[in-house]
Each structure stands twice: as structure tokens, then as C-alpha cells.
Picture 1: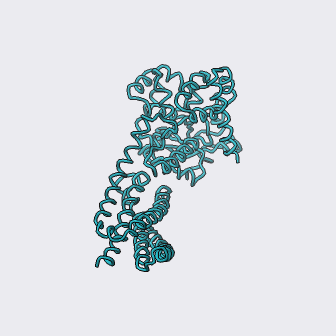
Picture 2: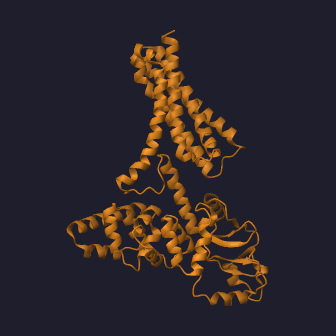
Length: 453
């Protein structure tokens, strides 16, 4: 219910904004901007066309623009930052966590990134450069360096006095990280335990040593799964030799989950998860053209299959009428299987041990549904064209194509993943080629065998 209310509120703000901009009453726009918190203002920016977005951004209070920036998608961030110099970017990102600064720098030109790094103080630059050395889709690219560490030999009283010397604790601090003198990870000291335990006890006596740290090169998807499985708020990140490098917090993991969800949805259409809904035509067109071109090539494969049976089509017009039915049914059935398998791969549920079982299940499901659909289709075609044989042909073709769709829906994502190709991005195009080709080949091939024998 709240999501629907938020959408209505956003549309109301957009209507107010457009009316004010058209009438030139910028005072009303400023009042609207000041009435919104950073997250709502970022949502309003992302919901506005480019020209309106630029006007809005110039009206955002300079004391607040950094907070708004953190809520924006990477593509919109890059658009708004593209016209700024290095000093302005540094001023805008002042007070940002290291991982948030890195996220922004990774989407700026290399020249600007280097200028921004040179404009930072030495300590901040070293922290940012450390995180920049890791791929953005790994634990290293996701981590922050704002860790608070303690030694196992310290008493809890010493730890409490040490914490009181801080003006504030980093966000999402639920544990202190226990390390030795070489900064090797030993365990965690939960704040909840620290506050209720005897101050004369040592850290070693109450620390938790059964929580494994996250390897720095672990993929962000695996990190998200660990957080979900263990209900973590934060987790330490270590190097190959177990040296503490930083920590990951739940807010960054939520971003990963959202990006993975966007990726799965957008990839089905061959688009980037960072696609801006209001991106300019000249920017959006090339992205879509790439996969349209690939799909056009696969469509010609299906057309070539049809061309093999031009003599059959000349003799029986009904085949041309019914031909799309077989391909369409195979495409839908294959998409169902493909979606289930891609989701299973994303959740880490599918491996060598259970692929065979899953394939058998999908084949049986397709056989049952194929027999049911073929019975309905055969009856309709028999009554429509007064020819029992055309009903039998479409029935057999449907069963064949649904079985082929199930087989392709299971095997294609697994094969693509083994080739390091994103199944969500390429799977649907490959599946369409298989179901169209097999559908046309089985239907027209069986018709040729019967009518032109």
C-alpha cells in the first residue's frame, strides 16, 4: 500500500513541478525541493526527463546535493557529474564513505578520476585507491575501510574508554573487529555483549570466533547470499593471508540485491540494469540496436527453416495460418523453464549434482502440458479445417517443440554460464532461435511427410 502511495505522491510532485516550470515560477519549485528529503528528491530527479532534471539539480541546495547524489543510480550520477571539475567533485563527495566515493569514481572518465584523487588528502586517497584496485562486483569493490579494531588482550573497560574517544561510530557498527598485531582477523566483539559484560573481562573471553570473514575477491552476489543466510548487519573483509582490509554493511548489500534484480529484469530484453528510463534518444538507441541486430540474425535462421518447405506451403495454406502457433507455444514454455533455471543459478541452487533431476522434471512437465495442449489444438484444427490429419500434425509438433523448449531452457543457461556469458542477457535470444527453428521444422517437416509423400 505504501509503495502505491509513494508512486501517487511522486506523480503529484511531477505535475506540480512541470506546471511551475512551464509558468516560470521557480520559487514554487524551490519550495517543493526544500520540502523533500534526499531520497525523495533523488527519486524525483530520476523520474524527470533530462532537461527538467538539469534544472532541478541546479536548484538543489549545495549543502544537500551530496546526500541526494548518493541515492541516485550510477548512470544519473554520471550525467550530473559530467559537467563538474575535480575540485567540485571532491567538494560534493566530502564526508562520503569510501565505497560510495569509489562507486562514483568508477563511472567517471579516467582523467577526471585521477584529478579527483590528486585533489584528496593523502589518507583519503590511499583508502580510495585501495578499494579501486578491486573489481566493483567483488567484496573488495563493495567494502568500506571504516573499521574499528581491538586486540584480544584488551579489557572491556579499555575498549569502552577507547570508544568514548570517538565523536561518532561508523554507520551500521554492530561489532568491533578483533585483530592481532599484524592486523590478522581473529573474530568479532558484538557491541551488545560489550555493553552488558563485566568491564574487567578481556576481549578474548567474550569475542565470537566462529564467524568466517569474507574473502576480498568473493563476488558481490555471493556476499549478498551470505548476508541473507546469516542475517548480518556488517561483515569483515580479509585478504588472501587473512589480513583485515575493511567491512561490508547491509546497506551496500541491499544495493547489490536491487541491482541483481534490475539486471535479471533488464537483461531479458538485452538492456543494461543501469538503463535510465529517461535517457536521451541518441544514447538509448545504440543500446537497443545491438540486441535487435542479434535477434534479426536469429530470425533469419528461422526464416531459412521455413524456406526449406516452400513447396509444402504452396500446397496447403492452412499450414501458414497455423505455423506461428507451434513456435509461440514453444517460446512461452521455454521462457518459463529458462526463468526458473536462471533464478536457480542466481540463488546458487543449481549445480552438477541436481541438474539431471531438474532436466528430467522439466521434460516431464513439458510432456504433460504438451499432451494437454496438443489435444486442445488438434481438436480446434480438425473442426476449423475439417481435416483430422492437420490436427494430428500440429499435435505432434507441439509435443516435440515443448520438449525441445524444456531441454533448451535447462541446458542453455548452464552452458552459457560455463562459457562466462550472462544467461539472463543471452539466454532468451538463444532460446527463441531454438523454439522457432524446432517448431517450424517439426510442423512443416511432418506436414511434408504426409501431404507430399
